[in-house]
Length: 284
Image (cartoon, rainbow, N blue to C red; front, side, top):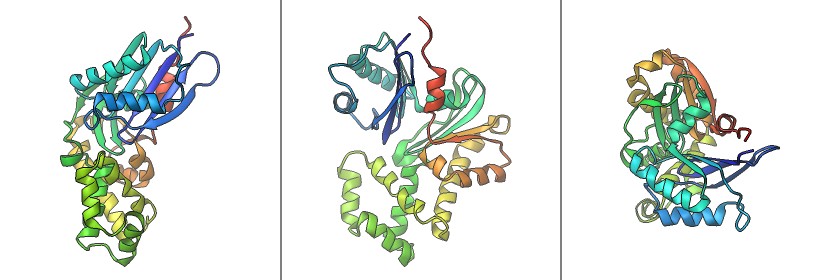
């Protein structure tokens, strides 16, 4: 049997699945990977430190890697060199997180695919490839509906005095009341997108509060307005959603699909189960 390694990499967390023949596949997590935010040597160092094997690393016949920040050919080649140097797989495939989500959610069927995690992405999948997608402006100017997008809204509400006392205290208990220190983390420390996305925990713990519901619905509606409704295919195929934000706020996603008269497909926390089935080892 082939040995197959699959990776679904977001900016915050990377999920791995290893098929080594008979028996159940092994699952494990490492830190997120994004070649826009990390140098190749940083990614290589993380792989060496966090993957659950060292001298006894198994030979990999096929490596299928799908991750944030790899939509361009340039970034795919960078990741391919890093992964090939570490795993020395017989065959290495690097694709975008959107393609990984599409394969995991749709298999060989057509569908609209939306990723809502630390960042966001969307596209139409024709059963083989992403045939249409919106350009990404990243966490600074885009990522509508994502965790870091909501995080910016939360920080604005706190800093500008929009929150009531309940949410103000809740924010300070989690993240402190020193706005200068928070801003320093955003501009002087690595992975500001992860830091912004961490603010979403305030929303999760305060569902039902009218300001929380407004933030969630407004941010997700921005994603629908900016991305979803721009595809003519959105009214012809089911919309599949994956990512932590989509999964946590599934009720709002479902409500917005109803408002826009769109067919909601699957909503899953991650696409790994589908990827594992799709790329399962074949008999040698």
